[in-house]
Image (cartoon, rainbow, N blue to C red; front, side, top):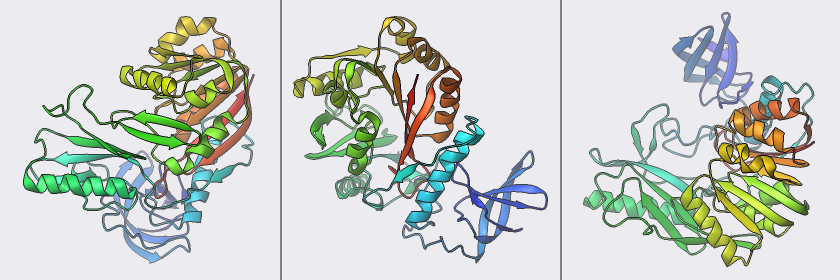
Length: 389
């Protein structure tokens, strides 16, 4: 089948129409004329792979990575960087219009990454001990793509990956380790295997320090932290900006990325985090920063909002949920809480749009949107939205 790609969809797939069918194609560029192979059909939507680029889009560039197309890590290397940014704006707009039912999505800016390559300071590498493979899962598969070098890793993590590969070749990696998590700090790299071994027990994962703007965070590979440190000062500024007041609440607070700057702008802060180790690390980061005006609530966010949260006052509420977004009961708790302002930081435009629809229906108005390209060479994008009640 021959098709022409019209645009990029939220999942990063190219959209085309042919023979009465909607066709979605991986690794395409808007304007590509392609010969494709239909892999599967669901309802009236066909999912296809490229067999031949008959006429390349002006936006298409040669992918520099030798694993591109097999490794599931990157799916935008075929696009020049301006085309990547434009596609991400359209992905966000599409979700806000189609899912959140916002008829007139306001124009907004996307902040590009200072480094299109070698930006990623956090990674998870899959390990196949039997086949001696170390890398990332192949696209739409649980098979490990053996990766000798990764073009999006910061040099410190690339060196750590090389060292792990050397240990694997020598047979000294723990055979039961399914994956390795790693994060680079200002003073080294923290690595944690995915299965406990005698050398890696509770409290034995090495710590690293990471300075972001005026704040310093201590963390380990077991903690979630944003992977693109280059953009974090601007992301924090977009999320919090000049907001000040008596009280702030942060949901899904992690190790305190937003908690520390919030504590310097509000008289009192409550930060809610379900993960015990992350909450413990946040307390350490606050203590190291000399901040005593924060209560860390180690609790499920929905449970907390259903009990203590319903009785709190908040001038400002910030939530940065995982990719699945906020549960319905979390949104319900926020609506009951009625903060004066909300900042929603999202890494998934579809779940963001789903949750915004509920918040707007509950009486909040959309004030501003800004996007950040935290993940160059992929379709993923970070969005910061402000609402007021």
